[in-house]
Length: 305
Image (cartoon, rainbow, N blue to C red; front, side, top):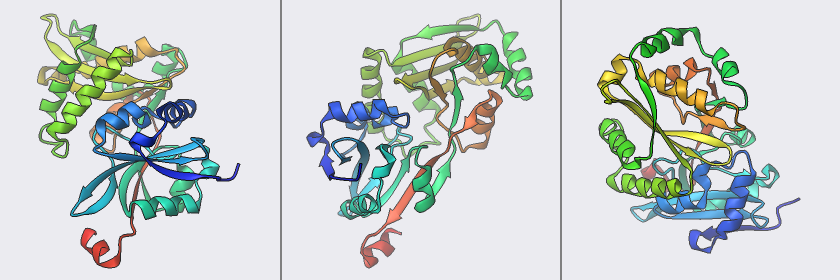
């Protein structure tokens, strides 16, 4: 079907039932594009709606020095077009860029054709397909992981469930206070609100590793939708790092989650050490993309640049 209608709607004008149905129906409709996620974490957002929600495109918006720009909010890895790719025409791109003349935000892994046409930067995101037995998953482990898991198995660790969302986020915030300065106190407050809402609908899973004294070694919080588990928050104590507790944690996570028609999404990373950690579990890279554009009038364009 050709593009018959292109609308750019303020969030309060969007039909969230139709929007979320489009997200749920498409493999590249990830949790970040759900209306509850956008409504809770964005300062302000608009939605491109094509052919009555056949294709959608969320646009988080901020404003600085009177200039409106599109951005990627904290804790929101990838958005982009969701739905029928045939609707991603030059007219649609032009309309987006006329609406917001400066953009720097992440678009989802499915946009490979778009990536070839427009100036985008590939970013790494590692995943494991869970639709197989744990033995099959374990066969993809790298040989270099054996030492770490063997060491962890000697520590008398226990793998436990938790429901304490605030604990996980507090530990994550404390651990990352220096290397994530762009994440504000307001971002963390909003994210806590989102996680508590997702927990009420059964879309949060928390697992931890403790030692024989019941001291916390590692903890992880996963978000969940109808396609993926998202590895959004993970923290390991100093003692846990020395005893390889995070390997123990993810090894048991994959054991628990195997044999599901789902994907385990590690949520990154281009950081070398983190990337190597994920790859040791046999995770494969499923790149997403940073789309940056600047079609501001020339004097302002140079200033913004």
